[in-house]
Amino acid sequence: MSLETNRFHKPVRKLRKFLKKMSPRPTPDKVHDFRTNTRRVEASVTALSLDSKRNGRRLLKGLEELS
Image (cartoon, rainbow, N blue to C red):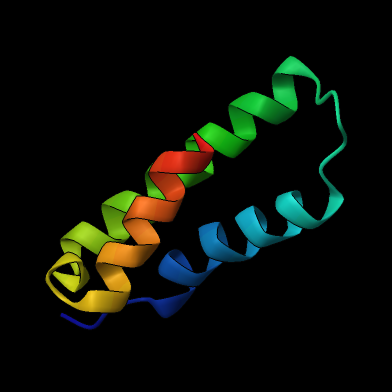
C-alpha cells in the first residue's frame, strides 16, 4: 500500500497558511480550522513514527504550545 503524500502535506500547508494570515482576533471558525489541522498534523507525525526523531519531537512540542 502506497502512501498518498498529499494527505500528509495538505494539513501542514493549511496550518502554515493560517499562521501567516492569522489576525489578532480570529473568528471561532478560524480557531476551529486551526485546531483541527493541528490535530491532523500531530496524528500524521505520530502515525509515521516521526515523533521518535528529534525534529518530530520539536514539531509536536511547538504545536502543543500553539494550541
